[in-house]
Length: 254
Image (cartoon, rainbow, N blue to C red; front, top):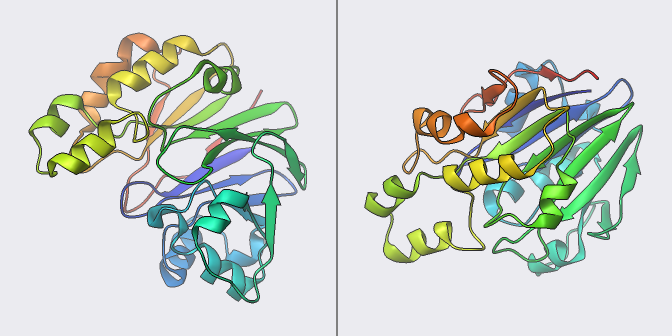
């Protein structure tokens, strides 16, 4: 299994997970032309995609989902609440409604949805299993729970959110209502919350962590490193996904 970010942040998010037989996209927060450019940088095209999985309906995850799926006849997998939140009928799109508590299969990948606390309608994140390798994506979550920590234990790779540094958020340019939203129980994970999460999961198989959804105004990579340094069992497991270029392909082996 391998994975890559096409871009991660408040302006757009998308991730690829690929095995020998299957390639899926999680979210598409970019327009069609932009996402095609980002795919090409990873030597992929929309025709390579087996499916698009949606975590929730916020525009930085949803913007390009329907246009890309419609243009290239790609099936979309999402929760009923997520689709209902759009409050419209989409023609020419293959929607597949998932149960947020039941795993399903796409090609040779088993996909486990993970319900998370976030200010969206029936939001989920995802864990992927294929050929003995386990990879998890966890962003857009206001706080961790024992259930979530159990789902993300024993992963070989993780894409995790480190959205904000608390001091930078408190003193930053956001209006008060937005600070409360970001830092609330249904907002995003801070550096310190990510550190606490890492201490609670089983890291024995963990080879790499891709840090994503880092706020350009309320965080800095150096602050992320400092906050989570004592929470990691593996040496130097960290990679970083940028808003503009995402990340290169990252290989996962058992």
